[in-house]
Length: 269
Image (cartoon, rainbow, N blue to C red; front, side, top):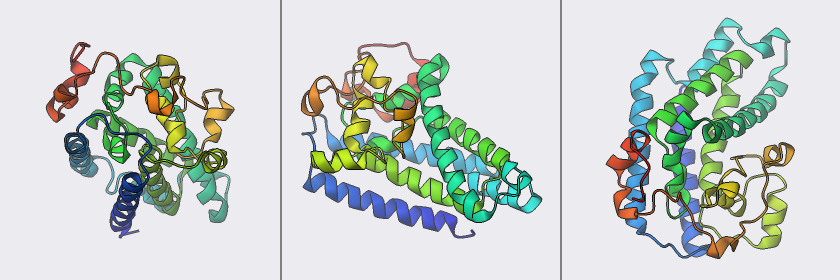
């Protein structure tokens, strides 16, 4: 697993390029704010997030989640080793449970007021495309990594499973935030298994009832299973409004303000 960072970076770059091309060729909606400006702020947040994780890495575990998985393997820790779950089963079960955990964590960040102040940064995006998948406050990213590491240690997830999950999660996040038009029949079939752009787009609606739905990132089963699935936005995909009512001025949603936003009072800015 010494090359896991190279594998993740290569997969990220490949998916980013493919989704960016698909968005350009088959856009779902006309962009209503400055795309270069949004890409700059969203990319800037991703750079800060990465720097924070790299700075914390030596204090937590080398390689973070992958490092945690390697540690459980080395020391025989975790539920899967306690029950002697074979590797061929531990890998898919780990990926499934980690995806369920992301669903639960996402809902938690919506329901707990202090966590919502961090997650609101993601929802201030006034348009939606693959770079929206990068728009997370660094404190949320650190907390999310801590939750992931904790689950990996408890379960004893194999390193391969964690690598597969992180590659799938990054790819799924870019895909389901994409401004990508998928034929309705194909979308209907895909969302029986995975979260599609049309399905996740509902979650970014300005309407609270729609924001509180479709929490999944990878598999769509969790929203269906726990009653948080909403098929379509009430205003339609072309007519719906993204973002939060308190933050409507795109010019003021720059990198510095996004980093400070959890500490600021709500405004119409």
